[in-house]
Length: 137
Image (cartoon, rainbow, N blue to C red; front, side, top):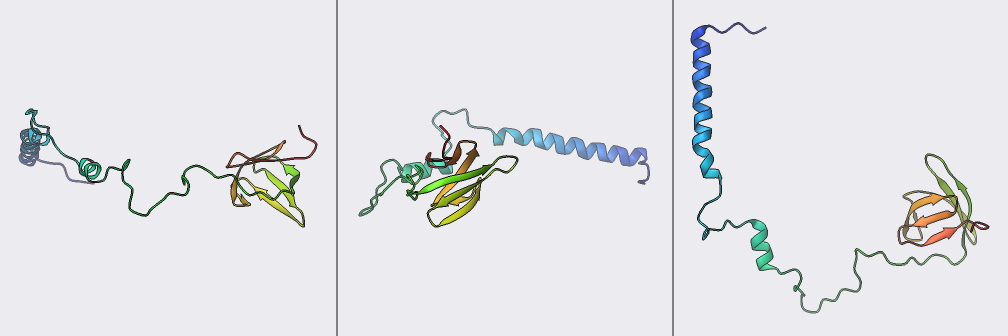
């Protein structure tokens, strides 16, 4: 337990607190923006956007084959069929591709595309394509 402060120590702590609070109030205007409208503060983003106009920046000899943020259609095996789905907390599906059967879950990658949903109709992939369970409309 800490010892109690006497009046002299309490007075000293109070004076230091007043001094620090006064210094903070006195220095606060230095942190604010200027009222002079001809002065404009520049940020790192301003200099970056002025130096590199991203919308018009095209290096010589560089061509974009496709937008990397737009998913491409997957090259799914033509004979991929969902044979069974296991629904519950962590749904899984059995996908048959000709000569092999694969057990997949949500988040797994099948034919280069991530599986986003498994329901009673089949498997939905991240590119929007769907592998259907036979006999389900």
